[in-house]
Length: 336
Length: 160
Image (cartoon, rainbow over all chains, first blue to last red; front, side):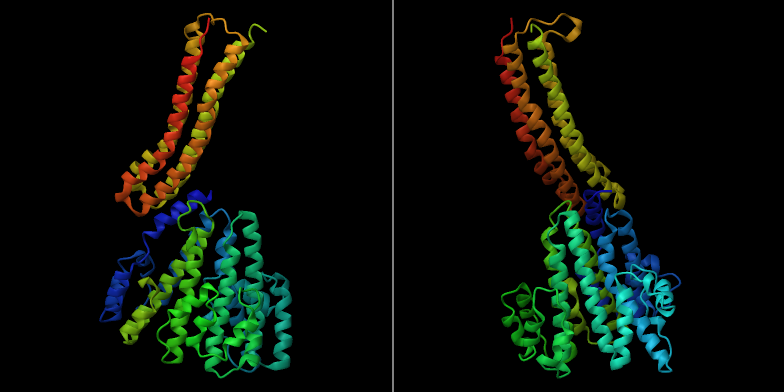
């Protein structure tokens, strides 16, 4: 298989993306049953049988897993697909570690929070961590998990453990992207990972600012490897979010943040900034959309598919819980 | 030494078909990969894909045409005895074959890439089939110019 074949197939698959008019119809559904009926007319229909009405997350996850598996089957370098699934693996590792920490404190395991979207089998991750066979863990986690335990013993702070795991995720993603970029002679993969790190740092900055952290206390939460230095992100904490776009105007992210309108409350600001950053990450890769053989098209397709899945979740949660339709409509990325 | 001219001429004729044919095969291969990708998801696009995939095949035909002209000029078609060709005339025929051999080879590859992109275009916008054909056909212009150049040069070579 070549990238000419893979990209052509992806172009044909793009025809199945749900469009803005579909999402508009979905959000306007009076009941969840009606919304799921609309979903039944799309590619997601194949996962609906046997799934109860409230479990639409399973339908969306099944479609995403099938997409990842399909792409891995025909993309010449499966590592490109794994690069996009890596964050789900790390999320699963966090779930397992937190469950074990809870068990130590007399709580219960929460393995129901594990995601099937990762590239690695969740049972394998659980067995390796519970059995302390860290050598079996991927992405260099074999060295990181013992360090996490040590930090936990010293601080009893789960956030510290998350910071270590996130740092490991971004280091691994960047190293994988550098390797792939060299192998495939492409130019945008590393840049995309760097912007992904920036986006995560900025999301953290919004959360931390609303938790009244200052520049100094927030600094450890920001990761290296992005185009923005952690120090520069920490300095933003002293400014209101409205000024961040101007402060970052020397980067592409500045313009993306400028577009954010609603900063009325924490949740609205975080959601809108998250949407702006996700759109920005897609825009970084969109330069390759006219290339008939650029490998970055694989990542671009997966980002769009994930965006579609996220939008579906927003729309269905909104309909199921009778939330404000206009607010949900603004959060959708498909209006672009 | 007396066969050197004929050897040069035959070498040129062989390269016309060889290089232009290799280019066409590569171009059709590239477009074919793209067509296979699209048809995996949408088999109904077979007709449109086939037309676009076939476009880079013309260079191979142009190369074969020049080979026929050269062989005819040399009198070796039909099993007859070859006309006498000195080394200077042989070299002139060899040079005449070069435009279609080289331009045919390279343009077919690039036309294949343009066809691959056009196939991706019709997978999203089937109504743009006309435009999708025009874009790779633009590359064809230069293969046609090379063919004309080769023919005009060959007509200028006098034997005997």
